Image (cartoon, rainbow, N blue to C red; front, side):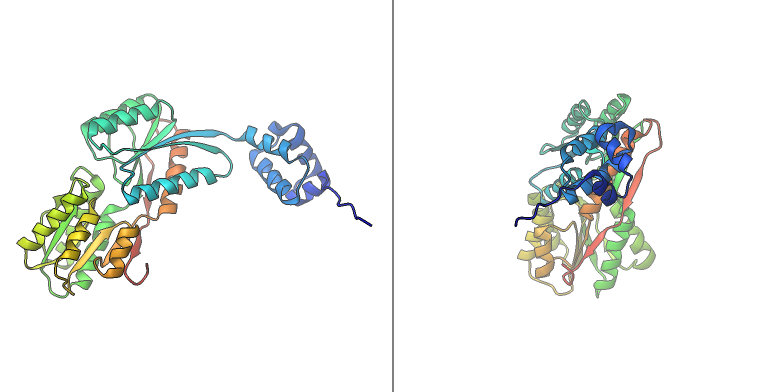
Length: 346
């Protein structure tokens, strides 16, 4: 004899969700009278027990959700770091519980200030809160002011930006990044000598802060080291390779290299082609397949990296909080902890 499986009832759903029967009835018939969090809980319970009215509950939940139209402008998609960051942000936007996120994510190959400024203004036409990675420049600052004047909040990612209006920030405490990199050289280099410094662009304020922290540590603890003037790669791997080749040729007593900005793959290629020195220390920025391989083969000694999932979550959180705040409210500053990788923990 076939046994009939009993369909879950409203009392069953109420018990599973930990609410009253009347609350379930209101979710089904008067959803606007029930808090959104409670609707979400009832829907989760309905999915779990296979409640027959799941479609109605899902509609009630969708009705109560707000949609946040967010825009993010990242740099070149061809670079592994930005692909990884973009993927993490998109995954975070999709996985948000409660309110929904309508995300517009763009990558820019042309990093000229006028192009960045134009895309920022265009993104703000359809988004309520926007974020970007950019170098500090008057054209970019003017675009930020144009956008904020329209009531759209702006958040800088990775590199702090300033303008006449409020600019939020999500990224690392770059002074600490520089101090930590310097600490690594101080502990790992056996005989003090010259240390080369590469950065992407002097207008990226995070890289300027990296250098400031780096130099401050050596002034305080290891003044016997000589820090060369930082050289800009302008985010080009080819330029970084040439610069490192020249640096190794011109400075026989070079004992280390701090790669604080873009072009790290080119720098690594130059180091691999040079005669290997056991006491040479290289500290780089961001963990992705190429830098991981360099840690494993000994080309890199240490990598300081953004925690991607945390970075993505705090980016979305900050954009939503900014949207909900008054345009004249104080800036949000979110300093993330950073990850440290060595050949022993990748």
